[in-house]
Image (spheres, rainbow, N blue to C red):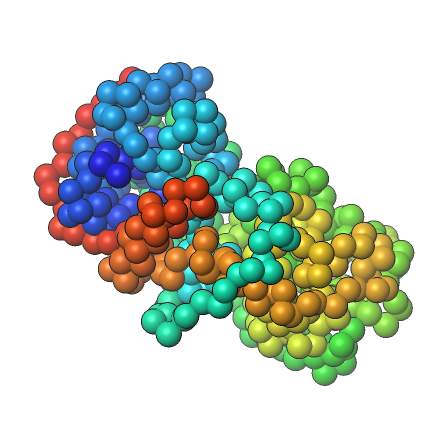
Length: 422
């Protein structure tokens, strides 16, 4: 790589650290900012404001890539409106596109793939024939990632406040979450309060479930309300629709002594609350005493008491498989493979969940570590994270025909130039 383009990154300074590292390696870095939140953490190299419209974006991108001789593009998530167009452009032009996403194997990993992630991964639909020859992975240098929720609150509030204050300069910007900026910022603060408020009650509820229903608990980990995994890679319009379908099926087909626990997503605490919907649906179905809902449950403690896990396509499914819990996916998921996940339908799953082939899961984990996962965090421990990413990028350069293996490092930020594009 000689000249790279950074689009939108995770909330916070991750791309700032990434750009500093790349600059230290002698790589020319160009960063495009689409709103005031992107402006909040200036990157090394040139920083350019894209102030044009979404329909004009593909043409602008093509011109920018040509003018600056870009040979690689980096972004976080490949389904945002601007990133979706960038992905199509890169695939058509044969240009390298590296996509970051939260880790498939959390909490100590982030995802980095060339060409796309999740159902856009180059490995999607290919794993069944690849896992049998996967070699073990040496993990002796693995480092643990500290909790990051408080940092993420600060980064989110700072991002959305800057986005709101600078709306005049970016009047054509289309955000991937269709809510006002002030709601985005306050939602993170509300999520922090929700966590503190519900934790004592939910921990007591978890213990009661274990004491009275161990071995008969079905778990459904909910996903973020506007998760692209649902919007782009599932048959559901939203989480609410999925909840209704699952409750209806559970009521009609599960054993009378089984219970269902729906766990709210930790990153969605401040945005949504399904308690009223679940209560009304369960009352209509007559299963109020068999369905439970909450925010602060410990999944590792629950897994050994679970009869099965139902998910749309959350990476929590991988965690469930790690704990040998039968798992059913209702959407497109990279890990949805015969022998790993239950291949029966939802109605059958309540009665006959299929066991997990743990040897196959171990091979899947090794494969993900070798090809998609980088030990690190978007919200701290930047030096270690960047070093791991840089190593992965070096590996992918040697294996040009294989799936990408990116890597990053850290540097002092040189003088930045701020250009404007309209």
